[in-house]
Length: 200
Image 1: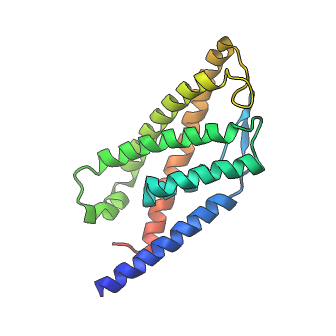
Image 2 (image 1 turned 90 degrees about the vertical axis):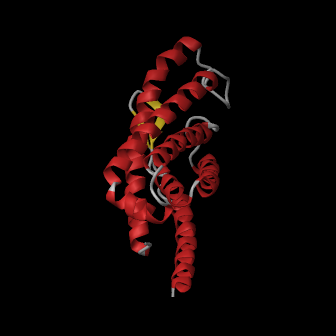
Image 3 (image 1 turned 135 degrees about the vertical axis):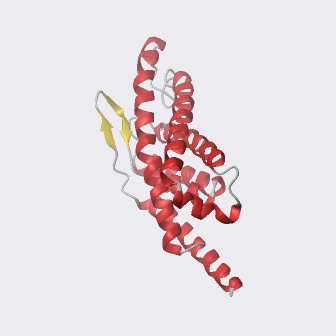
């Protein structure tokens, strides 16, 4: 009986993984521009990527994040053709913090009790992963923006370094709030998927 249930869960995981990848590909890539900086956009497409990461780890989430960037190059590159890769850098930076938060929170939790632990400690886990996700995302994007934005197109905007330095605080605020939107919703989504599959 356990073998059948395990096989069923594996099949469910495969279907959900494919579904989540499809959702990311077809989720409305409708960004919300940030006032004053028209080349910064809040978005929803990061949520399924982070959910995939929480469900399946980096091996699934990273390829989907790369696929997402390529899709954006075609359908919505923004003001700069390399813009989607700025977003990819931000996502990967955020995932590092989310991973660190997960590892810290579940360090002493037996593997067989991880699902119950996530459900029971959803608030604390969400706060820790969001906080660290914000921290690593802001750190990574601040460093990458400092070097990339000053470059000529298509890599950057040819900003003088004085303008780059003036922009960095706004970039940090934007990336922090984007992570604040993404990580909690991704965690809620992931736990909902796990509950729907009735994985014990």
